[in-house]
Amino acid sequence: MPIDIDSSEKFRQYADPTALVSTKWLEENLGKPGLVLLESDEDVLLYQTGHIPTALKIDWHTDLNDQVTRDYIDGAGFSKVFSRLGINREDTIVLYGDKSNWWAAYALWVFKLFGHENVRLLDGGRDKWIAEGRELTKDEPKPKPSSYPVIERDDRKLRAFRDDVVSHFGKPLIDVRSPEEYAGDRLTAPGYPDEGATRAGHIPTAASVPWSKACNEDQSFKDLAGLEEVYLKGAKLEGHSDVIAYCRIGERSSHTWFVLKYLLGIETVRNYDGSWSEWGSLVRAPISLGNEPGPVPQLV
Amino acid sequence: MATLELPETLIEDFASIRESERLDLLLEFSEALPELPARYADHPELLERVEECQSPIYLFVEIDQDNLTRLFFSAPPEAPTTRGFASLLFSVIDGLSVQDALDFDIDFPSKLSLQKVVSPLRLRGMIGILSRIKRQLREKSLK
Image 1 (spheres, chains in turn cyan, blue):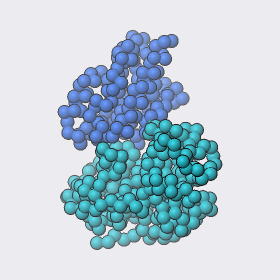
Image 2 (cartoon, one colour):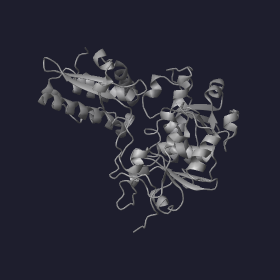
Image 3 (cartoon, one colour):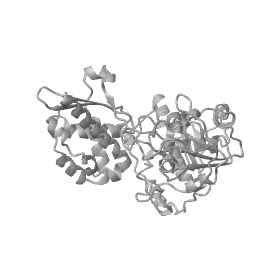
Image 4 (cartoon, rainbow over the protein chains, first blue to last red):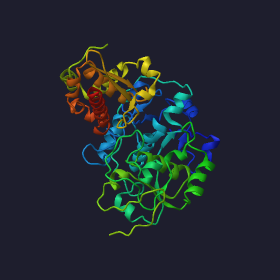
């Protein structure tokens, strides 16, 4: 059975009005058949300390990443994870998580590589739900396993690799990291682990638009006018743009990818998950320093 | 004050249970992390921030009058994994002689059978905390 959309005025303005649900909508729809609620956090233990009733846990690292190659799991692996969680292909998934939904957006992006159609984010994520004093539980549901089909991952439309970035020069690139990381003053976000890039700076021509510009103070997304101000007026993107977003490992840029694709409806938006942890270590990859995007590089 | 655990005991405890239970055990440690005493709780500027951790954690190392190592941590409830890491290190290092703490196995975090359930990337946070403990201790024992 299809799940109703959240028809709040704010969401109706977005290019895809079905991409978000509010905390109020979620509370009213908890437990509906065909609705699967998933928590995806940076912190691997946070779900166990208390979560939204009926929510299951998905972990970006231990569930969605291949444990040998730096890549995502394949179709068979994805089918295994979703079957264990009792998810069917036609189910509507609502994702939420800590840290302004970074890892929830990251999981959503991976789900889309496997073409799962109905996936929505909880606007404001875990923090907003808690700030509003809504219920948490430690009860972990025991879902009846399903048989989710084996769908091959399709990286072509939504994912960019380093060669795609090289052939993309001249078209919009968005660096969503902190201004200090962009300028090359530091390798990692303040308070975050060094994920192994050997050089600091940014990919030449990339515009700096930190991911947080898409958020209000309570971590919910800005309304359409607010987002247009940042990305269309500010970063000069257009509806038919072909954009690649990146950060360090692709989690913060999934957040921006979600905004550009679903809330603003920009035609082609890809997430470069190799991001700075790959580019900043590649031999002879061109790098720009400072606050300016820098010129299109002469490639050797 | 909790009794000092042997690192070998913890390594064995984690290795002997199923993967899913390892997270539960880490959570138990997380919940057992001692509160900061008032002299630090009121003076957060005295604590050193450990940058390697995904979520901020603050750390302070003291050497008491018996020349034993004393550890103090502060990490928010929204960072249970980081709290769990701190609490594990507390249980094996707090109360050791300065020399024993300095000699403590830097590879201890990777021996806890947590790579698969926590991920090596996250485990780096624990190695970061351990390195800071040793560094503070070295600086203080030279004074």
